[in-house]
Amino acid sequence: MSHGNTGAVVAATAPAKINLSLGVGPNRSDGFHTLATVYQAIGLYDRVTVRPADETTVAVTATEGRVPVHDVPLDATNIAVRAARLLAEHHGFERDVEITIDKGIPVAGGMAGGSADAAATLLACDQLWGLDSAREDLLLVAAELGSDVPFALLGGTAIGTGRGETVTPLMTRGKYWWVVLESPRGLSTPEVYRTFDDLSGGEVGDPAIPDALMLALRGADVEALGASLTNDLQPAALRLRPELGAALEQGLEESALGAIVSGSGPSCLFLCQSRSHALHVATALRACDLGPVSSAPGPVHGARVVAAEGTA
Ligand code: ATP
Image (cartoon, rainbow, N blue to C red; front, side, top):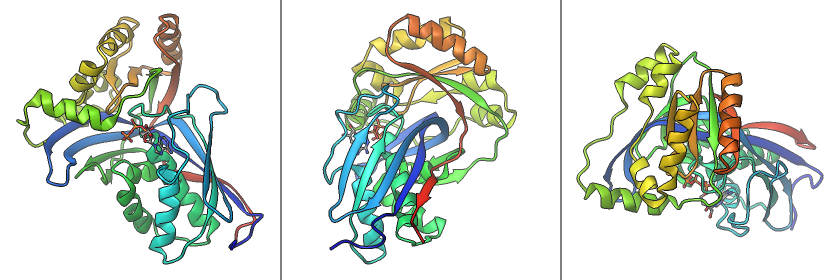
C-alpha cells in the first residue's frame, strides 16, 4: 500500500568528514575502539533524494563522474535504506521510499560517505513524512546507525568521543582548504582496525586530542594546524597500502602544509594555505597520476535539505 503524497520529493546533501586528529584507544567489549577525535566537515557532498514508493529501493549515481560506485550495496544493507527504516520504526510506523544517492564522496575512502548518506536520508525522510523531529532525536537515531552519522548531521568542526558518536561542536573561526587524493580501490575499515590491533599488540592507552591541535584551531593558525594533524590509524593504513606513504611525501614536496591519511584511508588529505594554493597542490598531484584529486574547503555545514516539493 502506498502512503503519503506520491508526487512528493525531498533532496538533502551531506558532507564528507575528515579527522584532524584520530586517537584510537582500547578495543571495547562491544568490539568498537574508544576514540578521541576532531572531526571536520569538508566541501565534498553526497546528495540523497527520497520519494514515497510501494517498496523501498535504492539507486546510486555519480553525476560528477569522479567516484566509482560499484561497491555500494543496492539492497537493505545500504545504510541509507537502514536510515529510512530506523527513522520510521522510531516513530512506530512502516513506510517505503525510493532513494537515489548521487555520490561525490569516495566510497570506502575513510571519509564517511555512507554516514553522510544516512544523515541526508534521515533529514530528507523527516521532511517527507512531516515528522519535524527534534535535532536531539535525530542525533540519537543517527548514533544507532553508525559512529560517524551524528557528525554528518552536525557538520562544522567537532570533538568526537565514545566510538565517535558523541559529538561536541567546536566554535572555531579558521577557514581551511584541503586537497583530497582518492584511491582507485577502497580500504575496509574493519580490516584497518584489525591491522591497528596487530601493530599495537593490544597495548594502547586512552586516546587524547593533542593540545597543539586545539591551540592551532583556536588561533586559526594554518601552519600550526598542518604540523599537528595526527591519525593513529595511519600506520595500519600504510601497512595495508604502502604506496600511500609516497603519496603523502609527494604532497609535502609540492608545498602542502600537512599531509595525512583520512580516517581509515585510503584517501589522503593535504592542508593548504588558500584556495589558490590548493589548486596549485592539486595540479601538481594530478600530474603524478596517483588517483583522482579534488580540493574542498572546510569546515562546512552538516546535512541539510536542499529541495522539497509536495510536502506538508
Ligand atoms: P567508514 O564510514 O566505515 O569509515 P568509509 O568512510 O571508509 O567507511 P563508506 O563510503 O562509508 O567508507 O563505505 C564503507 C562501506 O559501507 C562500503 O564499502 C559499502 O560496502 C558499505 N555501504 C553501505 N551503504 C553505503 C552507502 N550508502 N555509500 C557507501 N557505502 C555504503
